[in-house]
Image 1 (cartoon, rainbow, N blue to C red):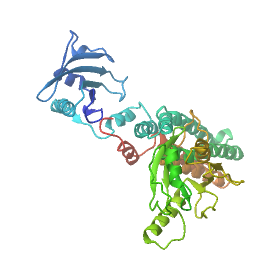
Image 2: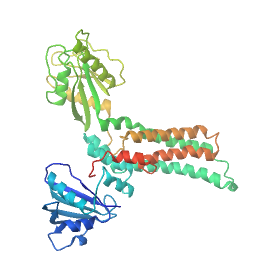
Image 3: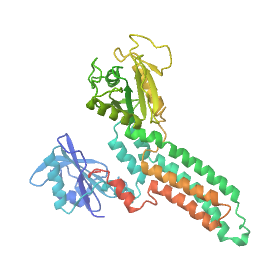
Image 4: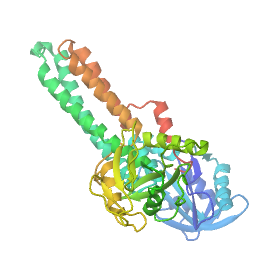
Amino acid sequence: MEVISAISTAPGTGGVAIIRMSGEGCLDIARKMFKPAGKTKVENFIPNMMYPGVIEGTGFTDFGMCVYFKAPKSFTGEDIVELHCHGGIQIARGILSKTVSLSARPAEKGEFTKRAFINGKLSLSSAEGMIDMINAESLASVRAGSMLYSEKLTSEIKLLQSEITLILAEISADLDYPEEDLDNLNTPKIKREIIEISEKLKKLAASYSCGKKIKEGVTVAICGKPNTGKSSLLNAMLGYDKAIVSSEAGTTRDAVEGTLQIDGVKYNLTDTAGIRETSGEVESIGIARAEKIISSADIVISVDDGRGEVNITKTSANIIRVYNKCDISRPQCGYDAVISARTGEGIEQLKSLISQKSVGELALDKAYIIEERHHSALMRAVQALSSAQQNADEYTPDILSIDIKEAWDCLGEITGETANEQIINTVFEKFCVGK
């Protein structure tokens, strides 16, 4: 493949910037623009070793380092050269410009990783795990992306594919060797095997409910009547004053948002307007927005200070009933948590309860489904196997194998084995240019 080139470090001023080239001939380009400080010539560089020297840019030179990664033992599976220069926008751009003038082509988004996928260095799901790690906004999201990147999910998918392959092989043997009296296909056995694989797929797909929250964060709506301490609770959970706190009813007229991490998971908190009967137009709009936020939240914290809770309807979220102002009075019973937003009492216990209600205890070694694409492929595989199971007694083996093969192909979309060009391009469009 032709040599591609890009700045692989983030734009801006920094200690070091890296210009990366990949493809046959990149070492020759490096030879034309890098003058080693030592006696070893560029063409004789030992792979994976850093060499100091002068880098020629467009109109200037810089002192830096050069490293050569020899194919196929490189990230892309091709020859790679990296030029490490001083961090600076114009320095990096000038060196990149020089590589282009020497026949390299500017890389497209994600093209380095795409070449790694094409050359069999990683699966499609592993590439998605990489970009999930890069874009992660929480520790849990980094971990989940790491599981994808380390091929944990790919291994599980390939194991399921191998089980499906065995079923297809059994059907194929029945079709190909009728003289061996194999035409009496063991249909009950195949149906049992299909059911077992389907259950494994369903269990894996079920982790998407938690995985989606790990990746995108858990939405938490704080609601209640005016002056129950909703804004004070938001501030107490965040650890700083985000919402305006006042004794005047209706102070919060629009949603106030903040984020925090609990056990590594990102939580998107929203302090909503106090819900009550009102004739004011502005406050009414705020209450309408509050009800909309409540209806779409993962967790709803219903705050009460002893004057009665609001009536929450039209939500499938987990509702946590919280009694606030326990520093003033204590409730009899009936609440999930008792707190004082003013003193901080019970806040950590409330956070633990929110975590338990939303994601539970996260397994560090589990491959959670965090991509909607993966979940869709799994459910289509389940549907195909369900169709095969239902029709096993009616259809001939060759027709039966069509549904089973479709399930195998659906799983192949996750790893990239059967993914079409549109799917592949969509995945790599999420990447930056230098990755």
